Length: 93
Image (tube, rainbow, N blue to C red; front, side, top):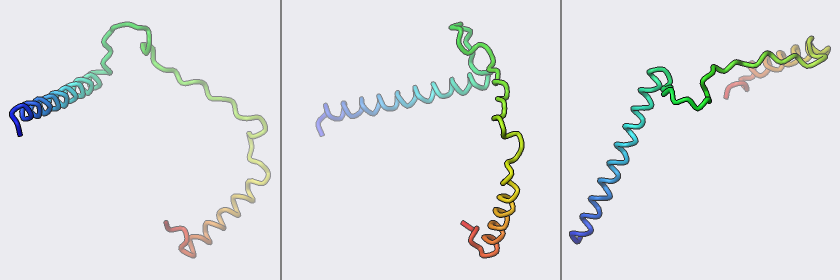
């Protein structure tokens, strides 16, 4: 291999190592910022300075406050199905 190729190879390797070092430093800085309370730099900007307030609970859909008339029969049938599956061993993945 020629001397020029060796120099180019060394420069490429050095550039790769510098990129990795920069990524590690940036990662350490962001982790340190998160540990210190979120990294608010006080730079303003107006965004994200207020805590999020969850929306109020949505109203329940009309007519569904109580279980439908078919629900108890469905629960009984489903429980019987599950029991049968467990007894035959078909419930195991």
